[in-house]
Length: 145
Image (cartoon, rainbow, N blue to C red; front, top):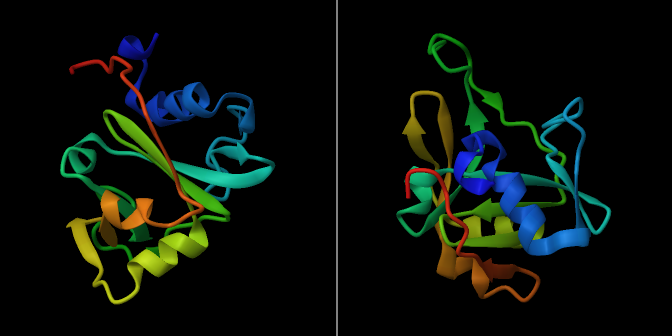
């Protein structure tokens, strides 16, 4: 199942697999509405999966964005009404409430990882130290790996 899944659905599928009944994905009609990919214990969450960043041992929390291919646009805030984030990598996923994410971002400088995205790069080890963060490992086969 996972080896043929489009990358856009990969993070949601992995979180669903790892956290089971605690995670409820939104319908395809609601996908990413207001920065929400689903609900975890009834609270809105956003799921981030990026292979290139995941391979570095970091997660990336986007703060500012532009539409791809429209560099002349003004920067806009990356929308999210999430209570927490799931950051999914090739072999693990970590649940991070926004309070802990903000704490980990203190004192960091924004990183511009492309011409359309600015945010914070954070080492996974910096997040797992927080008690409310949950880290689970998986050995799911992902297409191309």
